[in-house]
Length: 153
Image (cartoon, rainbow, N blue to C red; front, side, top):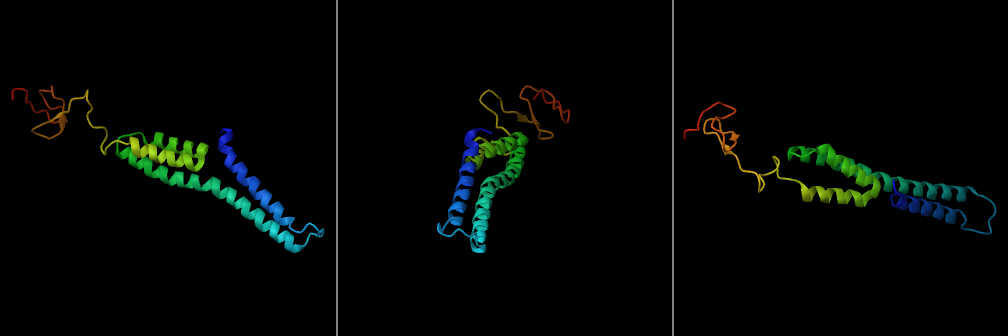
């Protein structure tokens, strides 16, 4: 993971430690470590640590839920579902929540229609067999599925 990926986590951790330190040192003239100060220190340190975990784990959980949806959607549309899942997880790991958003937006922009790609400019649309109704090449004289000969039509 690059240094920029760790930066938000490090800043939040330092913020939590700083807040905990300030709270525990609220009375500079009190040298005695009382139970009240210990409880406040524990509360704020625990809160800071929890926020670090939440900020690191919530995007991963969202990415896993979104990855399940993207996998199913990609497979339904004739794309490689596992490739898109890996892309989403990697973006989320490296860029955290921003990477998660980027992965979802990219998928929504590039996904193809349901059933796969439509014929492009260089592809000829296929015709249908009059007997079985399946798509066959334009230059076929016999249906490869049902064997009907229609070349003389």
